[in-house]
Image (cartoon, rainbow, N blue to C red):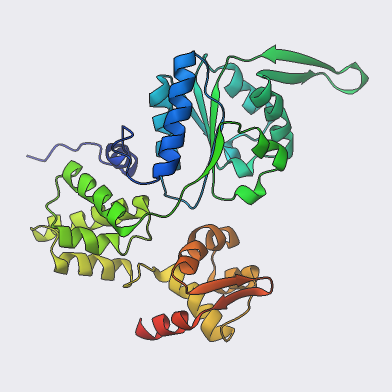
Length: 325
């Protein structure tokens, strides 16, 4: 008799591991405290909270914070993203379907077009939506009043947001920082309990030091170690963890194959640099945005790479790391 199959996809696991309360959300203490004050005060006044902008590298918990904002306010959250809002009509449909007090979460807000941004300005500032009906000389503007709402926006590239849009986030702009090994270890301990994985603190710390200081990556590595441990019939031993990292091609610093490829191109093909972003992208086959948003921040954090006006330069530590790996 076959074993019943249940849904255990990545999105369900991510929801299972996602913190449901402020106390469960580890790290980002200053941002959490500022948000809790803002939200609690707004709720006591019976007002919609002011709009909030979260920025920082991928995987640091921006979506989770948006969920906690909604839970704190006791309202529903509508989720969309910059690339999904292609026309003014798309945005109008979202805004007019909000209920009073709802949270609107827009991920990758830096990918909104300028025409969409301009429609957002009065919606965020004055709670109205200006719609143009008709074309040419007969065109007219109709103004719709929107229910009070709170926008939470997230971006990995805040420099691409226009100054007028940034200024509308009157509730605050908050940068999410990379996590310490100790914070990641706490996150992994909680995740291991939820996944019913037997893991020693030594095993937890091994994963914590190679997860790019990012909770999303930490949980991904924990799940992959769990899979191998399950197939080999045991817990998360040193051998299981090292074998998993070897299979995933993750080295002692937590660098993966794409990270090392960037360093190797700069060191071996361009004598350590300086070399431009687009040249690195062409040589590695990676998108420039992936290199800039995902790969470079971690390399810079470890002192392996430096950005200069003339291009990227590999540090002496980068040479040493390539030789060791």
